[in-house]
Image 1 (cartoon, rainbow, N blue to C red):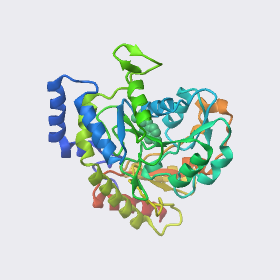
Image 2: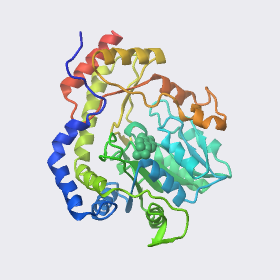
Image 3: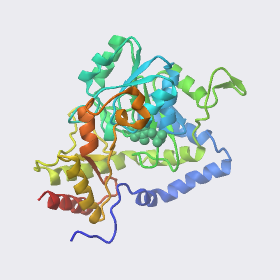
Image 4: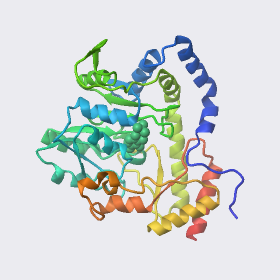
Amino acid sequence: MHKRQTAIPLVDLQSQFRSIAIEVREAINVVLDSSEFVLGGAVESFEHDFADYCSAEYSVGVSSGTAALHLALRALDIGPGDEVITVPNTFIATVWAISYVGATPVFVDVDAETYNMAVDSVEQKITERTKAILPVHLYGQTADMDPICELAQRYGLHVVEDASQAHGAEYYSRRAGSLGNVACFSFYPGKNLGAYGEAGAVVTTDQSIAERVRQLRNHAQSERYVHSELGYNYRMDAIQGAVLGVKLRHLDEWNSNRRRVAVQYSQSLSGSDTIQLPVEAPHSKHVYHIYPILLESEKARDSLQDRLSDANIKTGKHYPIPVHLQQAYRWLEYFPGDFPVAEGVAKRELSLPVYAELTDEHVQHIADVISDWVG
Ligand SMILES: *Cc1c(COP(=O)(O)O)cnc(C)c1O
């Protein structure tokens, strides 16, 4: 009965593109006319604007969020024998980066309301090998950074933010990207700030980290054809820099529209005991990269997903297998039950459509289909 002609996607990059097509084509044309295709003026200009946006001193454009994480850990000289504390309910790239530098990921469970790092669990995981804490600002809400940074300071550890889902998110009015020693962003197309290809950035106020990342991303060249250490080709494309420069100007408006969608979902779905809605911590400005609801069980989650799919409404699961239970990390010897909150989120979470162009009418329709299912 809720069948619609047009599907409601989880994210809608086409309607966003239509709203900025002229600006984007102009910016790309400037790059084409310049023949400066890698790094160059468009990337530098975006780096400058994005550092400002994050209230940080430096931003270094790179080829992906994964590359940003890898370079941040390299710039902090984290390597074999070192441990990095992070969470198991994240996109796996957070943890790949720890493995790329040869360090060992150490997981802690997450908070049952915010799904972010459970700060109380961190201290007991610190050993003499621990070098950094790597919280993820999951779904668009920052982790509880003050106690994390305090703990890090007490033990002489670095704090690396994985801000890949949190462009513009705030913690006590401070932006994601300025909350730790160094922050990593992904501009994968579906992120709140997305390129038209692969891209990422390392953001910091520490000049030595910024300079090190700048060299490492470009084959560790101190000057042309002089390589002082193992480097990478992790440079940002000029076209991505140009696209991101245009899109950054719209980010605040898009984020406030995501918040409008979230408020409407939360109003329409409140009052149901069977659905746990996302909680915006009092200190926090959530930018709803994802609007996650938690159902009572995996079965209930999958059944609601099927019902929404029948109504032509796309949903997602972020993320159905926590990293500690992935085959790739079996050697770490974690087992089901080790991180009950993260495992519960993996089984029970359903991501509803959220993007700036989603209309009030569509949100209401989605909420009605859900209420019907609950009914
Ligand atoms: C998207 C994402 C990444 C990886 O970014 P890529 O640009 O796809 O390499 C890392 N961490 C988190 C939390 C992400 O959401």
